[in-house]
Image (cartoon, rainbow, N blue to C red):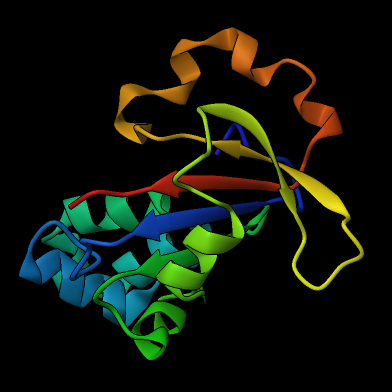
Length: 158
């Protein structure tokens, strides 16, 4: 969350994702409660024995939320638009988004793309091919980040 500007957008490319949680119980709780931020998640926990008994689900709901600072667009391979929007994320088609951002040519770090249906207008986006390696490990990746607030495209491999 630290790497994304207020009002920015993160695009998660998730071709292998079939559920939201790491197991069926967490997945069910995510689908019921959604990614609504820390205050709402803690309030939901006060009223739900199931959440109280599954603190890993509570942590997942909190860590997966943008806290309203930026938007999350999820591009899954196996989840429907209704499922994605049901947990509070925006949905975009995986194949279309991969083409629009030319993911096969993108390099880690800042890239440019031509905005669809524009007169050649370009947009900067920050690409992370291996998000598990940790964006936070390379401070130079944040340089001049206040000037570039467009998108972050992160592929998720499941």
